[in-house]
Image (cartoon, rainbow, N blue to C red; front, side, top):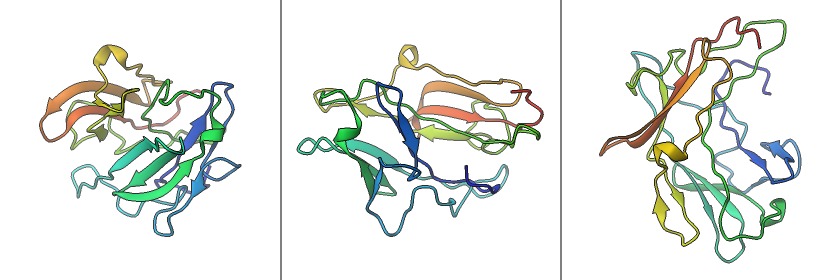
Length: 185
């Protein structure tokens, strides 16, 4: 997608008709921030055994406009207009958290996260914590283990695991990553 080996902050959307887009590659996401850009490389990236960095993300529907606003580090980044989505509900039918890599068909897949498969230790693998969504009454809800569909397309190269509640600091946690390599996808 970006043509380099850096970690990028990206957004995707998909409606019920299975149409969608990534970042600003087509109409959809409306960028409003002049400090944080979708598609841009992430400045501070954690490394295994090295400094650890986190990024706070929030996606919330504006009750008046029905637009879905994305915040990063408590700053508005932009929004997904309500017109992108065919359901006229005041809530999303699905939400997702993900990690992603991209590779060329003639080469090995790159590592994801720290390059370490999830083992339950947030110092080892990439993780998403404090996972919440708002229900149709706008109450914060945490995903339960039986509500989560965890998918990895080649567990030899990558994996993802939802651990549920871990502790009062991280709360609910999903970890993902892996070494990549010749995955045969």
